[in-house]
Every structure is written in structure tokens, then in C-alpha cells.
Amino acid sequence: MNNLRPQHAPMSQFQIHDDCLHLSGMALTRLVQKVGKTPFYAYDRQLITDRIAFLRRHLPAEIHLHYAMKANPMPAVVQHMASLLDGIDVASGGELKVALDTPMRPDRISFAGPGKSDEELTCAIAAGIVLNMESEQELERIASIGNRLKLRPKVAVRVNPDFELKSSGMKMAGGAKQFGVDAERVPAMLMRMKGMELDFEGFHIYCGSQNLKASALQDAHEKTFQLALRLAQDAPSAVRLLNIGGGFGIPYFPGDEPLDLAAVGQNLQRLLPEVKRHLPDAQIVIELGRYLVAEAGIYVCKVVERKISRGQVFLIVDGGLHHHLAASGNFGQVIRKNYPVAIGNKMQAEEHELVSVVGPLCTPLDLLADQMEMCKADAGDFVVVFQSGAYGLTASPTAFLSHPAPLEVLV
Image (tube, rainbow, N blue to C red):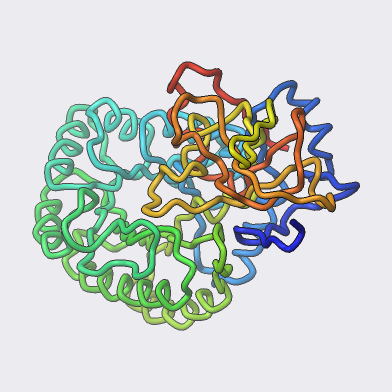
């Protein structure tokens, strides 16, 4: 069956030696021994570092890079990010605690997300981080808590713009949204802030995620800057922070092409002089999660049994959707597509076959690969799901059917 073709985007970020996948110079088989058991997630430290360096080369030097921690909140990963980036963006009180344990300065940590509790707001204000306000009601609550604590909260307005990021995998703005304040309501909110004991930082304008089209990002950046300049006219003080979001995508599926980052950077270089002329004190921030970590991570599980049912081959593994919901196709996919999946200890074997990889859960949804070409595998071999460094473990229902949680390692 060697005439079959791979059913996913090609993976080239990891080295292969002696038929075996390597991470940070270590063979997968040895890594399994080091970790002690499967399943587990492994993240390649050097690949993360290289991705950040790649961004620094192609984006204007004035751009500040922040890590959107929701993509992968593993403490070791966040610590590594804190040593390389300019800020961290969190989306819960739990993430905030992890971020505050890093060397990152509190005023370079920001907190976004609707429905923040009073306890979360109190912790954030006391810590001195920047709160991205999602509503007028949240503004009032922040001001009240600040008065009670006798502190001036650092705040920015998260704006729901009147445009969206075209071709994005998940749209976070435009139309009616639970995120941010509708752009047309922001001026009145800014006027209200002028009488409050608040430190106004600026704006957070985030449109969408997982975009592979440079032209769509270029258009969104231009519209974002235009909107920010209009809103700045009503700001209670000079804009010191302008977070234009991220949305940079990575390839997962057949036909996906990597984002042309150079084109995105060139367009930003063209736009920035005008922005800086009107907002000379503003730090321009790009907030990235998936783009920084997804390609650096793999999910590893072991083949427990090789089963044939009416001519179809199933590899039954000790992991599944409870650990990796996204790879199962149940995290935002409308039509299920296979993540890149391979037999990690048989990467270049000559004998291939068409197989489905399924987990131990008693549901047909527990599917990590559906009718994919792979090297022929047996019980004891290791299935690897690539592009797993973002929205993996913490985006999955680990308590489902009470199986053990997987481990995570940074190598």
C-alpha cells in the first residue's frame, strides 16, 4: 500500500534518526523511558526558542511579543516564555498565579476574559497587573474594588470591533460577542473613566485565531490601528499599551501552507510610523499562543492492541480524546480532519497501511486518526500526534471515564 499519500500537512520540525523521532536530540524511545509511562505530552524547548527568534527577525523591532498563556499553561513552559518574551496574557485567576511565579514584571502581565470574579479582580489589582475590561459593568466593579483596596487599578479596554478577521479558524470579534465592549460604546466608557481612580493603559483589540492568510492579517492590522487612533481621541490619558491580538495560524491539514510571516512584518513596518506619530507613548503588542508553542509539542501514546474488524485495521492506544480533544476533532472542527499522526518509533519503515487510531474510551468519538496512512505498527509501538503544543491537555475533558491524566514534560 505504498502508493497511499499522507493525509495531513508535512512535519519537518523534528529530526529523525534510525527510523525514530527525536526531540531536543533525544530519541522518542529513550524519552518514553525517561518519562516512565505513556501517555504524555512533550514540548521541545529549543523549537519554542527558535520560533520566538523567527518572530523577532520578521516583525518590526518596536513590536512587543506577549504569550497568550491559555494555549499552554504548563508552568515550565510559562517560565521559559517569561525569559524570552515581553509579557504574558492570562485568562483566569489560576493562570495569573502561574504567571506571577515567573520573573515577568506584574505590569507586563494582562488579564482578559469575560466574567471575571471579584476574587480574581481583587488579586489582579493587588498584584498590579493590567486588567483588560470586557464590559461597562466590569469597569464599575474594578473601580469599586480599587477604592476599597486604596489602589489605582491598571486597566485597558478590550474592544469588540465592527470588523472581523477574515479566514480565521475562530472569530473573536465583529458582530454580537461576549468578548469586549462594542466599539461604538467605547467612547462613552472612556468618558466615564475620567472621573475614576484608575490608571488607563490603552486598548486590547483581538479579532480571531488560527489564520494562515497574510492578506487577512494585514487587513485586520490596518483596521485595528485605524480604530485605535479613533478611540484614542476620547481616552482619559495617553495610550501606553495597544494590544492588537495575534491570530497567527499553523498548518494542520492537507493543503495548509505556513503563514507568510515576512509579509505580515513588512505590512506592520509600513503602518507603524503613522501609529507612533499619533500614539508616541504606546507599546504595540502582538499576543500569540498557538503560533509559539503548537508545533513544538507532541502527544505520545502506546499501542495496546492491533485489531482488525471487517478488514479495517484499528490501533487501540492508551490515550485518546480525554487527553487530546482537539486531535479527536471535537474542539471546534465542523468537519473532522486528521491531525498529523505517525508511528514515532517507525517513522521511515517501508511497509505502510491504512489504519484508524482509537483510544480506550467507550465512545465512537474517541478517534485520534481516521483511515490514515502510517507505517505498520504493532502492540508496544508509539503513536505520536504532532502540532500538540497548544490547546492539548488543558483543553481536554481529562475526567471523562476516570482514566489517569497524562504527564507533561519540557525537554
